[in-house]
Length: 182
Ligand code: AMP
Ligand code: MG
Image 1: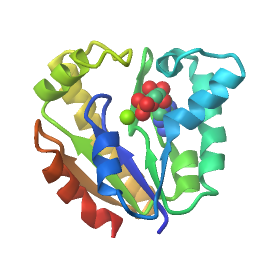
Image 2: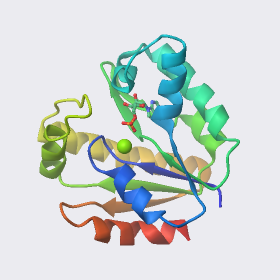
Image 3: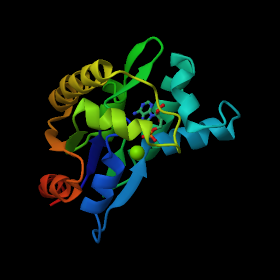
């Protein structure tokens, strides 16, 4: 198996769904944001992962490319990342052409939920410094991400699977994601 990319806007529960779907399988779980933030903390750029999307675009791109080079060497990986990252300057592609071609994913999973569900999950997550988006902005971000996922697919031939992670339906979400891992 090559690299499977899993995406979803902050607070949608992508990590939880995919970790459950991959349980008992010989798959390594890699978080792009952790690879990036470890590098950024090491060099003194940031103290917390949620500061990363406020760095200059040049700094973010530099971290992104260095992380992609590291991850591209791995096999049997689920890569937990973002189709787009919301920066003060607009949506930044998480896997721009020079990154997605290095990673060359075989599949892209897009985890979604209703804007209201995501809004409430973010409000109830004290562990993270989440953006305070409105439901309308959450809806927009998910639409942008669907379009972006298909652009990545067009560049690589990866399939795109939309997985719905509705409240109290985690098992259902895991079922939707499972065929991608086979
Ligand atoms: P997460 O823990 O998945 O929310 O990721 C933490 C942070 O890592 C995000 O808010 C982004 O700043 C950064 N990040 C994750 N994946 C990417 C990516 N593919 N490109 C750029 N930044 C990323
Ligand atoms: Mg996560």
